[in-house]
Amino acid sequence: MRGGRNVNSRPWCQSHSARRIAPTPFPGRSGGRRERGVVLILAIFSVVLLSVLAVGISSGVRIELGASRLSLERMQGLFLAEAAIRQARAVLLYDDPKLDTLQDPWGPDCAHPLDAPRAFGEGFYLAHIEDACGRIDVNEADVETLLRLTGDQQVAESIVAWREPVLSADDAYYRALLEPYAPRHGPFETVGELLLVRGVTPDLFFGKGGEPGLVDLCSVESISPNTDAGGDLRTGLNEFKNWGEFEAFQKALLAKMGGVLTVYDANEIFNGWFRLFQSGQQGYTSLAQLATVAGLGYDKIVGIIDYLTMQPGLTISGMVNVNTASPEVIAALPGGSMALGLSIATRRSQAPFANLGEFAEFLLSQPNGPDVFAQMIDHVNVKSSSFIISATGYPPTERGYRSLRALVRRTGNDVVLIQQSEEEWPAPPVVQVAAAVGRR
Image (cartoon, rainbow, N blue to C red):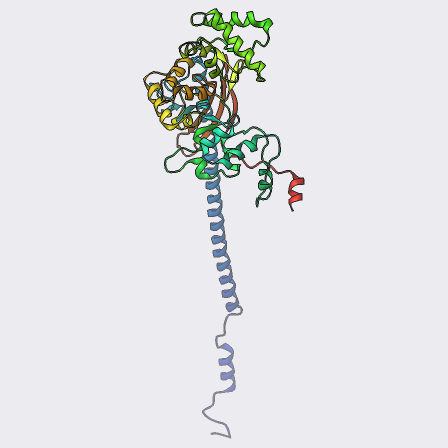
C-alpha cells in the first residue's frame, strides 16, 4: 500500500470504464421472443381452425350431395313404380272381361307373368296383379264369414262394428286406450285398417307359421260384372213383382233359357216367387231356392243359373271369384272347407270354370253337394272387376327403390284408379275432441 492506497486496486477510471463498456442485454429482446411465440401459436390455431372448418364444410357438402343423389334416385324409383302401375292397368284393360282366371295375361300362371323384371331407361320395375275378387271383402262379409276367416267370434263382431254407422260397445274400448281413437263407422278404406280393430293381432293380420293372414285374404272392394258367359246382363229373379208383368217375366226367361226351360218351367218359377211373396217373403232370397220349383231339377238349374241373379244391375259386390280364390278363402265361404278349396284349385288348374253353371255342376258332384250348393252359390262368380296392383321401381343403383300399392276397377273401356299409396298401414282415425276431453 502506498500513501494509504491499495496498490492492488484498479484505478477508478479503469474500473469505471470497464463497468461502462461491459456488455449489457439488448433492450426488449426477451419481450420480442414472447410476442413471436404468441404469433406462432395463433397462426397454428388459425390453421387448425381453418382445417376443421374445411373438413366440416367438405363433409356437409358430401352429405348434402349424397342426400340430393338419394332424393333423385327415390324420385326415379317413384316414376318407375308409376310406370309399372300404368303397364299393369293396360294389361287389365285389354284382358277379356268375360272370364278371369290365374292363366290370364295379368295372372301368375300365364306364360309371361308381370312379376318378371322389366327394364325401363337405366332402371327397371316389377309389377304384380292380384284379383281383389279372389279375396273376402271386409266391407261386405257377414259375421259368420268373418268368423270362419278369423276363428274368433269377438274379432268378427268387432270388424262388422267398425264399419257400421251406429255406435257399439267397442267404442268405449277404443276411447280407453292409452292413445285413444275412434272407429271409422264407415267402410274400410284399406286392408291395413284391420290392424286398428279390437282383437286383430299382428299374427292374425300378417299370418304366422307359413299360414296366410288377413292381409293376404281380405280386400276392401270386390266388384264384378253382373253378366252371363256371353257378356249380357243377368235377369233378376225378383225383377217382375206382379201378375201384370208375368208375360214379360216369361218372355225374359225363355229368350235366354229357351233351350233349357219350357213354358211350364217359366210359369212355375213365377208361381214360386208368388207363393214366397204370399208367405211374407219378398220373393226369392237365394238362387238355390230354384230347387224348390216343381219340375225344375238340378240338371235344368245348372243350365240356367248363369243367366240369373239376386242383385240386378251392371255390377255385383261381395262375390268371390272361384277361378282365382285361394283354398283359405273358399274355406271361409258359406258351405266351404279346406278340402273343397283344394278340390276347386285342382279342378281349375286343369280348366277354369267357364261360367257359373259349370261351377254349380262341380259343387253338386261333391259330398253333400246340394247342401254346399245351397249355401255357396249366392257368394261366388267367375269374373272380376276389382284388382290390386303392387309395383316397385328400381333406379340404376337400386338404392332408392319405391313401392306403390293400388286398387283399380275395370269398367267397360277403362281401368279406373280407386286408390294408390306408398304406405298401406294408416294412422288411427282422429278421435273427436269432445270424446277425448270427456274421457279425461
